[in-house]
Length: 525
Image (cartoon, rainbow, N blue to C red; front, side, top):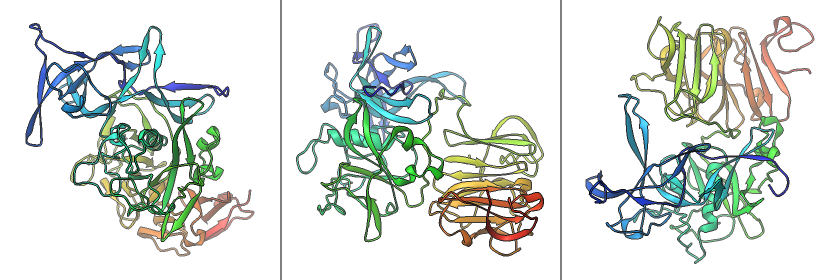
């Protein structure tokens, strides 16, 4: 980059497109069309094709579907309607996991301008979104990208449907189409670029967020139903990232972060690796939001849901349909479980008391079986797996809940994933060794534990076991990480101190003398 920083640019597979759309015709030179019924209305789409990048230097030709009238030769980015020259679907030829045959699968979205992906800073694992108007590689120049509506960038430019203007983003529409203008007449192009940075900077597809630009709380502006306003109900606690819609170093959308990312005790070097500044925030009438106003440089912000968890951004490369990309791994005495980056959970080994989580008690599986819930459907949206040396595992769900399966001597073990009652807003999980007890850190910094408590390992000052979580109240709301052993528990606080409790045989609590404690004590070090 211009400042001398070395980066590797990582392009998303299949989505980078060349500006050479062609109408597909049959042997009689008639345009090929397909009909898709959306709701109750059949829609006829023309089939187009253009070169795209599959992976690295390998090109392929996907199909695109456009509802434009026959003979139309002008196609427009960020449009989906036929009268506007829109493109509404991208179709990829993939292997059908059910039949094993190659078929075309089509996803709804729109064509976008420029090329976007991740810049990975050399010497780190820290990704950051980049945006460039074009990419020249050899004799080819790539100028566009496709934005899928579901779990992609397409929701940013998607307009609010008629009658659905609530003043806040919808799941599949942020109403920041760069072809449009705001209610004050200014272009939405900068807001689109800023929103691209907000949506992609922390790799959070599937996590509930609320983007905002209209400073109706911090800038004394009126609430506008067609704009993205601050302080949406349910999103009033965790400001996450902010942007201004400009580029730095010619390719990087400028970013600000919440001070959580700047705290070294949270174990996330992302903000430090990129020298990202923190954005000022304020609390007004019970809503904590970025302080968007004229005096501050950032003009867009994003809050996480009140039950969400912060996490350090990571980048992974996956082949579609493969078993790769284990985002989290846990090993027991005779089983191993992983959370894949697609949100599913898989286990293999010998099932001891339900440890595989697939309702296959006593069986041995040499390949992964999917973890299920009570009705037999797959456990989805998993972002972390916990388990250590036993026959019991727990998973952290994207909605902040915890789900466990296998042997648990507290009496609540199952052969399928069962939600831990009374526990929400989980940020980190630790499943205890020898299936004794589990603990979870919540987003507010409180620590909760459940299970066997015969020597005080739950940390609540008693020796009474509990099948429901009890708070380790002595640590307050400053816990950022917890680890569990067979008969002890340790936690790290945001001030960098470590606290441990329960049986301390052989100095397991790092104390000077062997002793037993049922409430947290500060660990010497």
